[in-house]
Image (cartoon, rainbow, N blue to C red; front, side, top):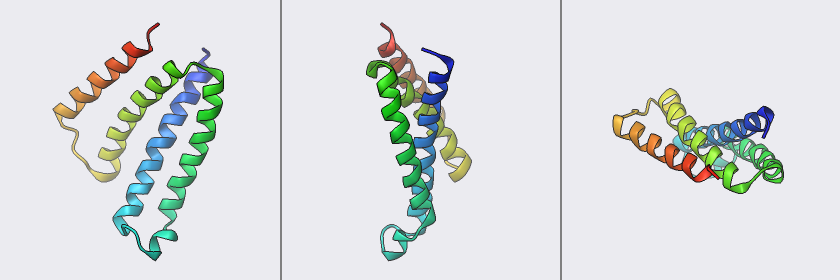
Length: 113
């Protein structure tokens, strides 16, 4: 696997984590009413998901499912913790960090041949 492929997988993970941030921002303004339909954060989050989906399909065509899913999932966990802290001032507790590390170690073990 090339460096470009790892970069592509990283972009997929970041797009999905960013999409979650925009959708959460949309849900803070209004949970679901008519104004939700016109919420730019909701649309931007959806757009990021769509772009990530097409990159995901491309990546699945180029690599092994048993490598791609654990790798991108681990990166999404890390990005989500960072984005939650940065954008929403969510606390990063020691137990959360330990939990993420355990999940990431498990994902990397699953990826081993």
